[in-house]
Image 1 (tube, rainbow, N blue to C red):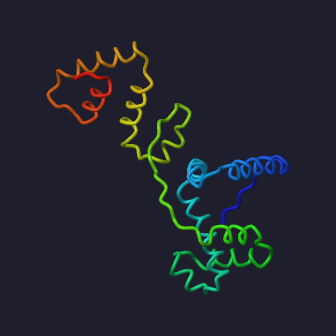
Image 2 (cartoon, one colour; image 1 turned 45 degrees about the vertical axis):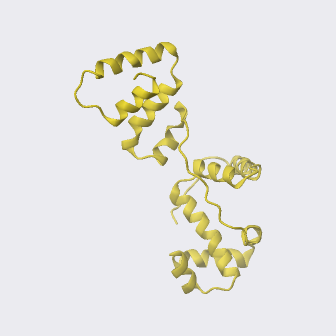
Image 3 (cartoon, rainbow, N blue to C red; image 1 turned 90 degrees about the vertical axis):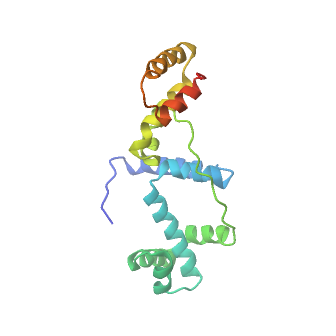
Length: 179
Protein backbone atom coordinates (compact mmCIF):
# COMPACT_ATOMS: atom_id res chain seq x y z
CA UNK A 1 0.00 0.00 0.00
CA UNK A 2 1.29 3.46 -0.87
CA UNK A 3 2.38 5.68 2.00
CA UNK A 4 0.29 8.75 2.59
CA UNK A 5 0.94 11.44 5.12
CA UNK A 6 -1.85 13.84 6.00
CA UNK A 7 -0.94 17.51 6.17
CA UNK A 8 -3.72 18.09 8.69
CA UNK A 9 -3.32 17.60 12.44
CA UNK A 10 -4.64 14.27 13.72
CA UNK A 11 -7.42 15.99 15.72
CA UNK A 12 -8.68 17.74 12.57
CA UNK A 13 -8.63 14.46 10.60
CA UNK A 14 -10.67 12.83 13.39
CA UNK A 15 -13.26 15.62 13.20
CA UNK A 16 -13.53 15.28 9.42
CA UNK A 17 -13.78 11.49 9.69
CA UNK A 18 -16.52 11.85 12.28
CA UNK A 19 -18.39 14.18 9.91
CA UNK A 20 -18.10 11.53 7.17
CA UNK A 21 -19.45 8.88 9.54
CA UNK A 22 -22.37 11.15 10.44
CA UNK A 23 -23.15 11.79 6.78
CA UNK A 24 -23.22 8.07 6.01
CA UNK A 25 -25.18 7.12 9.14
CA UNK A 26 -27.80 9.81 8.49
CA UNK A 27 -28.78 8.36 5.11
CA UNK A 28 -32.15 6.67 5.46
CA UNK A 29 -32.16 4.58 2.28
CA UNK A 30 -29.52 2.43 0.57
CA UNK A 31 -30.08 4.49 -2.60
CA UNK A 32 -29.12 7.68 -0.74
CA UNK A 33 -26.03 6.01 0.71
CA UNK A 34 -25.07 4.76 -2.76
CA UNK A 35 -25.36 8.27 -4.21
CA UNK A 36 -23.20 9.67 -1.40
CA UNK A 37 -20.53 7.01 -1.83
CA UNK A 38 -20.54 7.42 -5.63
CA UNK A 39 -19.88 11.11 -5.13
CA UNK A 40 -17.14 10.51 -2.56
CA UNK A 41 -15.30 7.52 -4.03
CA UNK A 42 -13.87 6.60 -7.39
CA UNK A 43 -15.13 3.33 -8.87
CA UNK A 44 -11.88 1.58 -7.88
CA UNK A 45 -12.07 2.84 -4.28
CA UNK A 46 -15.69 1.73 -3.93
CA UNK A 47 -14.88 -1.68 -5.40
CA UNK A 48 -11.90 -2.10 -3.07
CA UNK A 49 -13.93 -1.28 0.05
CA UNK A 50 -16.86 -3.46 -1.02
CA UNK A 51 -14.52 -6.39 -1.69
CA UNK A 52 -12.93 -6.03 1.76
CA UNK A 53 -16.35 -6.27 3.38
CA UNK A 54 -17.18 -9.34 1.27
CA UNK A 55 -13.81 -10.89 2.17
CA UNK A 56 -14.66 -10.41 5.86
CA UNK A 57 -18.04 -12.07 5.33
CA UNK A 58 -16.50 -15.04 3.52
CA UNK A 59 -13.76 -15.42 6.15
CA UNK A 60 -16.39 -15.41 8.90
CA UNK A 61 -18.28 -18.06 6.91
CA UNK A 62 -15.14 -20.23 6.99
CA UNK A 63 -14.04 -20.07 3.35
CA UNK A 64 -10.37 -20.62 2.55
CA UNK A 65 -8.04 -18.05 1.00
CA UNK A 66 -8.14 -20.01 -2.27
CA UNK A 67 -11.94 -20.05 -2.40
CA UNK A 68 -12.11 -16.33 -1.67
CA UNK A 69 -9.45 -15.56 -4.29
CA UNK A 70 -11.36 -17.49 -6.93
CA UNK A 71 -14.70 -15.96 -5.99
CA UNK A 72 -13.68 -12.28 -5.62
CA UNK A 73 -10.48 -12.07 -7.70
CA UNK A 74 -8.52 -10.54 -4.80
CA UNK A 75 -4.97 -11.22 -3.75
CA UNK A 76 -3.87 -13.16 -0.71
CA UNK A 77 -2.44 -9.99 0.83
CA UNK A 78 -5.91 -8.37 0.85
CA UNK A 79 -7.43 -11.45 2.44
CA UNK A 80 -4.61 -11.61 4.99
CA UNK A 81 -5.06 -7.94 5.91
CA UNK A 82 -8.79 -8.42 6.51
CA UNK A 83 -8.13 -11.65 8.43
CA UNK A 84 -5.60 -9.93 10.68
CA UNK A 85 -8.01 -7.08 11.32
CA UNK A 86 -10.72 -9.58 12.22
CA UNK A 87 -8.30 -11.27 14.65
CA UNK A 88 -7.22 -7.99 16.30
CA UNK A 89 -10.67 -6.46 16.68
CA UNK A 90 -12.76 -6.26 13.51
CA UNK A 91 -15.95 -5.31 15.33
CA UNK A 92 -16.90 -2.93 12.52
CA UNK A 93 -16.55 -5.72 9.96
CA UNK A 94 -18.57 -8.11 12.12
CA UNK A 95 -21.41 -5.61 12.63
CA UNK A 96 -21.54 -4.71 8.95
CA UNK A 97 -21.56 -8.38 7.90
CA UNK A 98 -24.28 -9.18 10.45
CA UNK A 99 -26.47 -6.29 9.24
CA UNK A 100 -26.05 -7.03 5.52
CA UNK A 101 -25.70 -10.83 5.44
CA UNK A 102 -29.21 -11.84 4.33
CA UNK A 103 -30.23 -8.69 2.48
CA UNK A 104 -31.38 -9.16 -1.08
CA UNK A 105 -29.52 -7.23 -3.80
CA UNK A 106 -31.54 -4.34 -5.19
CA UNK A 107 -30.34 -2.69 -8.38
CA UNK A 108 -29.76 1.00 -7.82
CA UNK A 109 -30.54 3.07 -10.87
CA UNK A 110 -27.52 5.02 -12.04
CA UNK A 111 -29.28 7.79 -13.90
CA UNK A 112 -27.58 11.00 -14.94
CA UNK A 113 -28.73 14.08 -13.08
CA UNK A 114 -28.58 17.76 -13.77
CA UNK A 115 -25.16 19.14 -12.94
CA UNK A 116 -24.47 22.47 -11.37
CA UNK A 117 -21.30 24.39 -12.33
CA UNK A 118 -19.37 23.36 -9.19
CA UNK A 119 -19.75 19.64 -9.86
CA UNK A 120 -17.13 19.18 -12.59
CA UNK A 121 -15.21 16.59 -10.57
CA UNK A 122 -18.19 14.26 -10.52
CA UNK A 123 -18.92 14.93 -14.16
CA UNK A 124 -15.37 13.94 -15.12
CA UNK A 125 -15.57 10.72 -13.10
CA UNK A 126 -18.99 9.69 -14.26
CA UNK A 127 -18.83 10.53 -17.97
CA UNK A 128 -16.08 10.15 -20.54
CA UNK A 129 -14.82 13.21 -22.41
CA UNK A 130 -16.95 12.64 -25.50
CA UNK A 131 -20.20 13.24 -23.55
CA UNK A 132 -19.15 16.59 -22.12
CA UNK A 133 -20.30 18.90 -24.94
CA UNK A 134 -23.74 17.32 -25.08
CA UNK A 135 -24.28 17.35 -21.30
CA UNK A 136 -22.95 20.87 -21.01
CA UNK A 137 -25.18 22.20 -23.78
CA UNK A 138 -28.27 20.44 -22.44
CA UNK A 139 -27.70 21.90 -18.98
CA UNK A 140 -27.09 25.37 -20.41
CA UNK A 141 -30.38 25.20 -22.32
CA UNK A 142 -32.29 23.86 -19.30
CA UNK A 143 -31.02 26.62 -17.03
CA UNK A 144 -31.24 29.45 -19.59
CA UNK A 145 -33.57 32.38 -19.03
CA UNK A 146 -35.87 33.72 -21.75
CA UNK A 147 -33.28 36.12 -23.23
CA UNK A 148 -30.62 33.40 -23.32
CA UNK A 149 -33.04 30.97 -24.98
CA UNK A 150 -33.70 33.58 -27.68
CA UNK A 151 -29.93 33.82 -28.29
CA UNK A 152 -29.72 30.03 -28.56
CA UNK A 153 -32.62 30.06 -31.04
CA UNK A 154 -30.69 32.62 -33.11
CA UNK A 155 -27.64 30.35 -33.23
CA UNK A 156 -29.82 27.37 -34.18
CA UNK A 157 -31.41 29.40 -37.01
CA UNK A 158 -27.93 30.06 -38.40
CA UNK A 159 -27.13 26.35 -38.11
CA UNK A 160 -30.32 25.59 -40.09
CA UNK A 161 -28.45 26.79 -43.15
CA UNK A 162 -25.89 23.96 -42.91
CA UNK A 163 -26.45 20.77 -44.88
CA UNK A 164 -25.77 18.17 -42.17
CA UNK A 165 -27.76 18.19 -38.95
CA UNK A 166 -26.25 16.27 -36.03
CA UNK A 167 -28.22 14.47 -33.35
CA UNK A 168 -27.11 17.09 -30.86
CA UNK A 169 -28.41 19.87 -33.08
CA UNK A 170 -31.79 18.13 -33.34
CA UNK A 171 -31.94 17.62 -29.58
CA UNK A 172 -31.11 21.25 -28.84
CA UNK A 173 -33.63 22.46 -31.39
CA UNK A 174 -36.31 20.33 -29.76
CA UNK A 175 -35.32 21.55 -26.29
CA UNK A 176 -35.79 25.22 -27.19
CA UNK A 177 -39.09 24.40 -28.90
CA UNK A 178 -38.02 25.33 -32.39
CA UNK A 179 -39.57 23.04 -34.96
